[in-house]
Image (tube, rainbow, N blue to C red; front, side):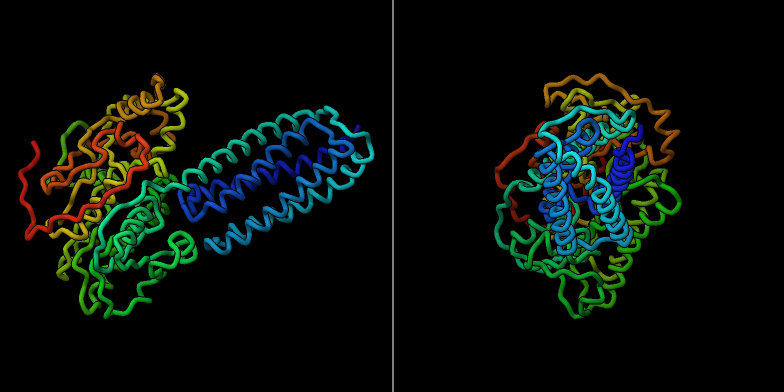
Length: 497
């Protein structure tokens, strides 16, 4: 006997695959919506729509919706249309969609219309029957639809949690007013948005250089000046400091030749454009604070490292060394340059910590390989405080390790995070299959650096979150920004033992 639901379910599954692709590629990897406070409304719409899909997928897989339940199902389908139309309007106001995402949205809209057209006569037939549910099965399709329902339901929960977390993007900031103008690149990123909030709280004039003016305006409101090109800024503009955080995510895909070019261009290319802009300014900025990473040291094993160590081997070392070299060219123009070599940046509002916490919360935290690779880290608020110190204090120059003094290996980090949730840690992920499957990209998980914040400590920097346990704690206490005591000259420090 022919099953009239099979064509409908087939198209629904195609729609589910396209929707998952849109979510993963555009919402997660490219736009990073779950970590953008300006995306709360869009994520709310996504969570609502995904919850509807979870009900629809499971309901169509196993039930015939008869009588008044057919009308309820039709109403649910109509609500999805209304949410999608609202989502289109919100997306146009809050971010610039890439061409492929627009095409995919068009295909999804057409596909949804086809589903409605195919389902309409079936709903009419169900509506004529007495009200109730009739259990049915469509063979393998029912089971695949059930799996799709679980997946999209989990995504709805994940987005709902993101909406709640983004409502509190860090504790309030307490600070005195500070004069001056600061140009920030990468301001909409995980670190950049907290830094920008701190600069605005200090009543500084903030200029944001971004690829997406719409998204930045939705996130920060009217206070900062937002530009998409340095050409929009006059050469006679007085800028006191520049903070360069721009760069494509190193975890955004395997390190193919093309991907390596993107990573290099997004860091080295952007920095070279900044230095060229400094050269034509009437008065270059006093300071350039440039992001870097502890990957500069490569896979250094058990060696204790300070800022005097040379660069190590591997692509991450190449990337960081190239980035720093481009930044230090500004010194020839009289610009003080400080390169902050960041470790893993932890905070509950985004970045790595929520991803590590999910398995640890349920007792599935895993040691990677032998777990002996060092995992230097810093809390986001301390990273922001270092950036602010480097902006204002002339003693901050050259490379500075932006890491906590609480040195831990990957196994220790996982064990202590699991203990924070009162869970044990017993799983292990073997290193060999990871290296085979991911190639040099696996260095993100298997390479380590035993790094000490030697220069920062010598400059008198104090950590508000000096231990992992303090970094794991949530707090509503204001982040107090104490203005640095300005040094007259760089501090000379002995090498680490």
